[in-house]
Structure formats: structure tokens, C-alpha cells
Image 1 (cartoon, rainbow, N blue to C red):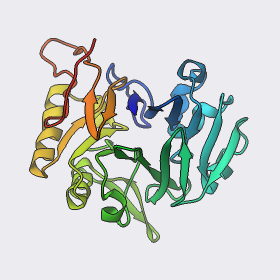
Image 2 (image 1 turned 90 degrees about the vertical axis):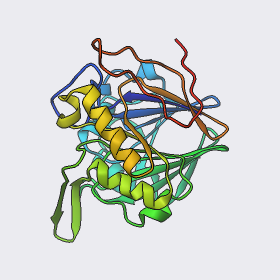
Image 3 (image 1 turned 30 degrees about the vertical axis):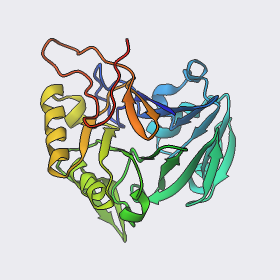
Image 4 (image 1 turned 120 degrees about the vertical axis):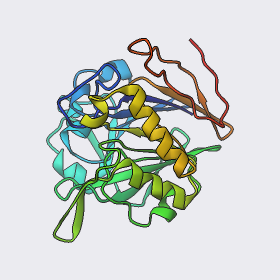
Length: 271
């Protein structure tokens, strides 16, 4: 199983060389190419990605508007998301919350999370023969976090903010974005030892790469977790339950940190 972080930018106007495109993940397994989320930045670019299936976490434009002109494959989403994008010219398939969808030899479980009232979101717990990862680019709260994350090798989470909470209460629901430090607490409680953050907000996209990576890595160490920030086009391969880095990114400037591997795991740098 190979993961490619096609994009790592959240729903903000600010861009950088490391975080240019809306967050999307490509999961390759056997002959399947499964894309998770397809925001507005991917409009007109799907032929180059050639996905065999697309899964959506929710219907916000930075996660679904790339489908406005169609898709070369089936699109899977919950009923709430399907209803919100029903006018898009794509073949939509409904997934029930907590249900498991088998695609390309992998199991995708849709787990409801709190993020938005108008566009209810899910996370995906993805399971293969040797590894499991949890993908949630937008989240305010994760109900039953320990049960949802138990046995997960890698948590891929919301990088909207590092320490400052962007969560607010509306009626009985929590909406917005939990900070990285809170998500690390969930991972620690569930025994998850590796975390990568995407869907980066202005703090990360407009900040100093080296200092921000160091800050997230330090927060991870304080929780017993290997943590870092992903950048566009970063790649990981899962082999026998281990995360293997397969691409070494060139830093933007001399002195800025390069893509760090996950310490404690097998690492291979291939040009």
C-alpha cells in the first residue's frame, strides 16, 4: 500500500510551495488508485491522477468541488454528502456511517466526526493486510476516540492550528478544527504512535517550515508519538506494518528542514 499526499492545504487562500493544493490523499494498493477528497484545486486535474475510485469525507468545496465537472470513476460518500453534491455530473454511491466498503483489497470504514453542521463529515479508517491508518483532514471532535483509533498504525489529521483551538459550540454540536495538540492526546490515549498532519491552516502555510516542524515534533515527543507536518507530494509505503519513506523532498531554501522520516521505522530514500 502506497500513500501520496497530493495536497496538504486547507480551505484558505494562502498558498506556499510546500502546501499549494487542497488536501487530498491517493491510496495505491494492488491495481487500485483510491483518492480521498477532491477539492476545488483538483478541478480538471483528475485525468492526470487517474483514480479508480474517489471517497469524500464531506461536501465542503475544498473537499468536493473538484468534482463539479465530473469524474472518471465512481464517487463514494455518506447520504448527507451525496445530497449536497447531487447536481455534480458524477456516479454517486452512498455509504452508511460505520459501514465498511471494500475497494482494491482494502477496507474503508466511514466514522462520523464533529466538524460541520451543514456538511457533516466522516473520517476513514483504512485497513489492509499489514497496516491500518486513520484519515481525518477536518475535525472538531472525535467521539469514542479510543475505540475509533485502537490498532491504528498512523493517524493523518487536521493541521488547521497547532495549539490554538478553533472549536466552537453551536447548539449541541462542536464545529471547527481541533488543534494538533488535542489530536495528539487522542492518539496517545489510543496507543497510536505515529501522526502526520495535513489540511494546513495559515499558521503552517505562512510560517517558517523548520520552526513549525520542530514544534510539532516536540509536541509529539511529549506525547510519545512521532509527529510531523506533511507537504504536497510526500509519499509513504506500508510494508509489513512499517512506514517506509520513498521520496526525499528538496528543501525550499538552504537551511530549511527536508522531509523527515518517521524515527523508529524503516526508512528508504529513493530519488
